[in-house]
Length: 146
Image (cartoon, rainbow, N blue to C red):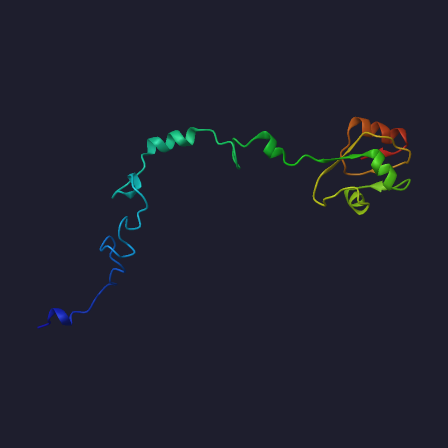
């Protein structure tokens, strides 16, 4: 006949008993945080309150209520056509890469938009948006935009 001392354990022993003793690391609040609803046994936040929170508009981050200005992103860098006229040679093809190479734009990943100014040279602008005054100044000097 087997005795209690001869029985073999079938499962793993509980790792640590919590809430026992004054000096133990799992005493006092026993890993449940502070006081309140979440510290109690069987705590459950009522779904009705969660639904009220979910109905409130969320103004930051990604989602349906994201601000229109945030979605638009960073505003393009305004570059005067007179500045381009001073740095580029006559008959040059102006693209974003050529503006970066000429040192007109500071950052490589920022969008660029041409704004008004005086133009004396003929340019071919490709893939860069321009204002109506910039477009008129470039076309007046004999250039084209596409």
